[in-house]
Structures are given as C-alpha cells and as structure tokens.
Length: 287
Image 1 (cartoon, rainbow, N blue to C red):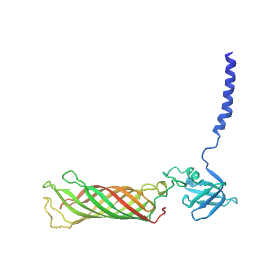
Image 2: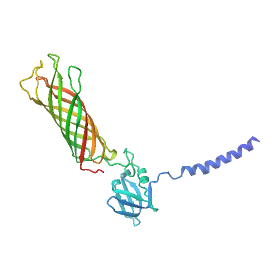
Image 3: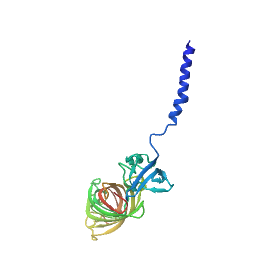
Image 4: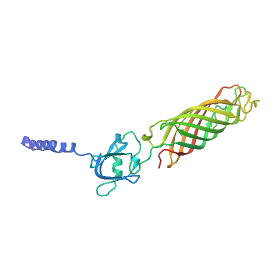
C-alpha cells in the first residue's frame, strides 16, 4: 500500500526534474546584452535608425550594426539616447547591462559620470605641517598653490609653492626656533588607476623641494649671520582629487618631506603634513 503511494510521488518528482528544472536552467537572463531595431541618437545630433546595439571592447564601446551590415562604434560619451521601436528611451537599461567589471561608476545612462582627465590643473589651498620641534611637533599652518600639467593619461608634472612658519628644536640649548620659509616644489606624479576605471584622480608624487628661509639660527638658537639661506630637499606626496563639478575639484593629500634645517650645521629636518586644496582643471573631457 505504501509502495503504491510512493510511486506516483516519485513520478511527479521525475517529471519536475525533467521538465521544470531544465526550463529554468535555460531561461534567458533578466538583463539583455543586445538590442535590435533601436535608434541611437549621438551627442552631435546624428541618428542611427533601426540598428542592432551591443556592448563591445569589454564594455567600453557600443557597437551599432545596420540592416545592411554596416558597423559603427561609439564611445558611451558620444551617446545621448537609445530609443526602442516604440519610442521609449532605454539608455538606462543599456547602461546597466555594461559588462565592464573594472570600473566603479556607470558609463551610460542615469548616474553616469565622466572619467577624470585634464590638460592642466591649478590648485590653491591650506594645510597643516608638523616638524621635529622640541615640544613634540605642534601643527603650523601652511598656504599652498601649484599647477599640474598632464604628460600622459597617467603621468603629470607639478610645480608648487608652499609658505609656512617652520619650527625646529635645537640640540645644544633644547629650545625651539622658528622662521618663515618658502618652498618651491618640482615633482613628477603617477595616477594610481586608469582614467576609465574611476572618476577621481588618485595619485602619488615625488621630487625635489628648494627651501628659502627668512632667517636661520645657530645650534644655540641665536640668529645666524647667513640669514635668508636656502637649500634642497626631497618630498613625496599622495592623495586624490575629487570632482565637485565639470571643472572644479578638491584635492586632499598628505606629504612627507626631508627639507633643509633652520639650524646651521644640521643637514635636514623631517616634515609631515596634510593639505586640502581647491582645484580648477582645463583640457581633457568633462561635462
């Protein structure tokens, strides 16, 4: 009796495995990867009517195939709208189906952003610096300005100026001495990620600094005769420029500097700091 009741249940289960499960396994994915009979409107006003549309180059280009077999490729930045056969704009649907996996923002549609690129970028801002003062390193304010010039999509040259009051401890008398200093920096920077992978500019820079002191001191803390001395040093800086708009951004960075010493006879002074600057960029592609 129990055997007869089990057999129909087994048959029903077998039918489910043979029929239902394969159907679910072979069902089409929720997100389309290509679209037919669409009209693509480019940013220059050109209309590509009744084409098949698909992502190409791993998700960084759109490929349009006409009814005659003609193939046209467009960058996402060149596409203003994608119209379905019924007139609906499906640009968000196409953007969401982008197969590129190494980007952290959408290339097409609502919420899409433009890769951060520039020809020249001016920055001006403030910061705080800590040196090797006897009191453990109090923070002194810094004013700064500079300009970055793009050498390639991932390399730039920066020339900058910093103005601060350097504080340094003397070994002989155990007191702090301080004087205003002006730094001229010349650095080479590298972008940490490819422009197509994010919409900010994270970077690492390194180079030379030339420091001029308004006055210098001897080991006892007395003003030295060679007031206004200058000398070279080295600096490394890392940070990121975050976009605030098509041209504006904010640069948040930290630096470590081996700079000339205020005290005659000393070689160099270790110096660390944090900076916040407003940036304005020109050139490149922005919107």
